[in-house]
Image (cartoon, rainbow, N blue to C red; front, side, top):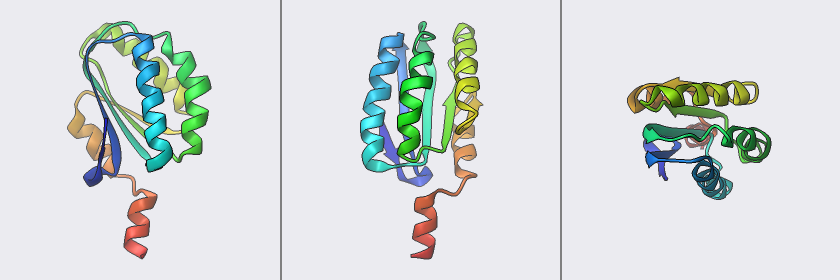
Length: 130
């Protein structure tokens, strides 16, 4: 997990086999970082994962989302897992979040970064006006 200044986003790179518990754990770590960074963009890269994390979607919608909204998250780019079983879980999460933040699903990180770059963030605006 790292802040990418060139895209003004927090980047989370996932690898290996993950579970719902792993998703909650990383989401809590992201929230801790986001409370400090207040970054409007998140790039969640799960292209190199397998595993069943669908049970985390309820927690992400009802516990995590209200908290990250308070920290200024506006754009969520999701790089989809190569495992088609996980595609339905990602699409379910998109449906749950899309009413409150802009969510994009992508097959590669480059396209996700371009999508995030298409939105001017508040920190970019303050740099241009300040």
